[in-house]
Image 1: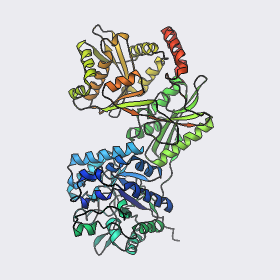
Image 2: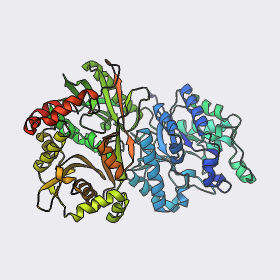
Image 3: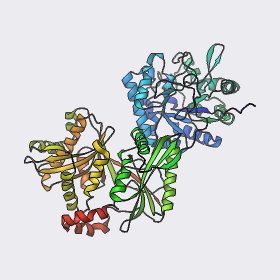
Length: 640
C-alpha cells in the first residue's frame, strides 16, 4: 500500500525595496537622492499584505534597513500579520562590492534595527542581487558572527552579475550555525534553469513557471523558493530616464498580470515563510527549504525547582536580542524568597527548544492593590520572543492568567510599544549610551560642566573599590532613600541579588581620602552592557563630587572590560535623576509600560509623583531610620 506523500510547502519571499533601489538602476540613480524621491513602498507592501491575507498565505519579507528606518509601522504590520521578518541588508549594496568589515557592519546594523523596531528576532538574510559567490565566501562567517541562522543569497546559475552554478541546488549547512537556502532552479538539459520568480517570472509565461514549480515539488520532492519585489506589482511607479535598452529589458516592471499570477501560485501551491530551521531536512545532501507544517509553540510555566529548565531559559535570554537582564530566570527565586510573591515565569517551547519568555509576578497589597506585573522591581520586562506567534501565545496566556487570578490589571514593562490599543504609562524614560573604546574618548564625551565635576572628584583624591558584600552599600542606600522619604528595600534583597547573579551583580563603593564610604552603586552586567541599578550616597558626597566620580569610575572600568553600552537606567520625567543623566550627555528614551485593564478605569499611579503620597513621604523623612528600615520592607514589597 502506498503511503500518501507529505504535503510540500514552498517558501514565498518578498524583497522589500523600492524601485529606485534596484541594482540595475545604480548607475542612473545616485543613492544620495533616495530621500528626495517618491517612495511607494507602503502602498505596494500594503497591497501584498492584503493579497496574502485574502489568499490565507504567509511569507518571509527580506526588508532593507533603509526602508525599515523610515517606515517602522510597515515593519510592525508585517510581523503583526504573522509573516517572518528577515534582513536584506541596510543600504542595498551588493555583498560582492563590500569589504569584509563593511559587509559585517551592514548586516549587523540591519539586523539590530529590524529587531529593535519589530520586537522579534531576525534569523534570515538575503544578499542584494544574490551577491554571495565563490569570490566572497567569507560572507557566511560574517553572517554567523552577526547571529543569523540562515541565508538565502546564492543563486546556482550563470549570470553576468551573480551566480554560483556549482552550488548545491537545495538547502545545505554552511557550518554548525548557518544554513544556506539557494534560490530554486530546475535541472534541465544539464543546466540549472531559474525557476524562482523575480525577473524570470515577469518574462516567462505563467504556465512555464507553474510547470517548473510542479516538477520541483512532484518529481524532486523538494520545496521551492518563490520571490518577487513590491515594485514589480506597481504599474504607476515613476519612470527612470536615460537607462539603456538592456537595463530597461532586465528591469521590465509592470508585467500585465504579475499580481494575478502571484495570486494564482498562492492558490495552487501551499506557500509559507522560510521558517527558522529545517526540521527533518537532509542537510548533508539535498533538503527541503521550507517548513511544511511547523508545530505550534506550547506555553509552559517555569518550575522554580527545575534548574535544567532555568538553564535553558537563560540560554535563550542570552541569545535573544529583545531580552534584558530582567528576563533572567534568577529573578523568580529572588522575588519568591525575599518578597514571597507568586511568580509565573511563562515560556514557549517548540520541539524541545525555548522560543520566548515572559516573566510575571502576582503582587497583592491592601495599600496598593492587586496586579500581575512583568516584572516587579524591573525597569524592563514584557515578552522576549523569536517569533510573533510565540509572543502572541505568551501574551494570550498572560491575559488568561490575569483573569483567572482576578487582578484589576496586567502590566507589561515593554521597551517598545506593542499594543496601540492598551493604555500606556508615559512617566518613565531610560538612558542608554555607547561606551567608546578609549577611556579618554569617554571622558571627552561627557559635557563640559559634568566633566569638570568628574575631574573635581579625581582632584579631591576619591578612590573606588569593589565590595565583596553589601554592607557599605546598604548603609549608604538606606540613608539616601530615607532622606527622600521613600521606604528602603531589605538588606537581604541585595544579598539575594549578589547570591543569585554572582559576578553579574557587583557593588562599587567610593571612598573619601580618609577611607570613609561616600557613595555606592550596585550594578548588573548583561552581555556587553553595564547597568548601574541601585545607588546611595552620604550627604558629604555632593561637596566632594562623589556621585559624578562614582559613575565615571564605573564607566571607566566597563570600558577597560570591553563593554559596549552604559545603561543609566530609568528615571521619572522632571526629576533630579532625569536632569543628572541628561547633564551627562545621555538622551532619554521613552519606556512603554502597557496595561490591560480589567477592573479599573485608569492606570494605577503608585509612585512618589502621586499627590496622595506627599504626606506619607514627609512623615517617612521624619521617622527614625532604624524604624524606617524595619518597616520599609513590608511596604516596598508591594511597590515594585
